[in-house]
Image (tube, rainbow, N blue to C red; front, top):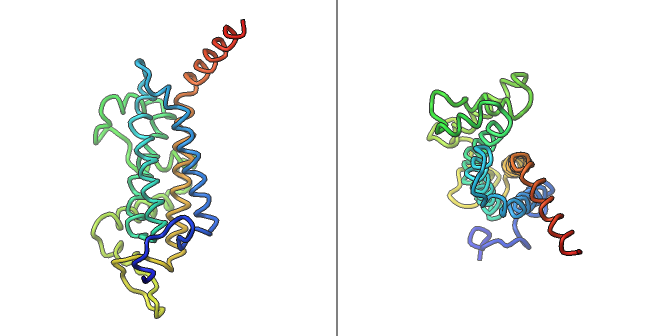
Length: 223
């Protein structure tokens, strides 16, 4: 069985020993833990718009990140890089809804085209730089668009080292593309950190209330 034919496990995946992949794993596990903690609260009958938006977006965003992680495990980096676009967009939308005054109303009205903020605005606000890194934000968005859509500028980004050292397109695994793997893993881990932070912020009051209920029940049980 060749390296291209085998199915990798956590014990032998090609990029699994790299620190950036371990950080991705840690962020993914932490995000799952946050969802497990918030899960009972997410079933409430009277959720706020922000809480409902978090339920709509965060679990599926984490699922996209998990899909990216599995593609990284198997070294299918083309699909993993393409999935970064929906992951980062959803992460930025959650960040906007939770932290911007008009976010909840825009979401409640259907997040309509022409009224919702552009992706560049979302990413700028999420970065906390407010325009300071506008060229960087633009380059990130251009990169997303070029790889998601069929564009010459995006296609060349999937050139990978072949066994003889030359660059070539691969219909299989990309086993020697450390730079692309690092970009994918670090961006995914950062998105997961933002997602869990905003999920906790959205449910903060409900968590405090729920904790008090549990404490009161415990006190009653002791009496």
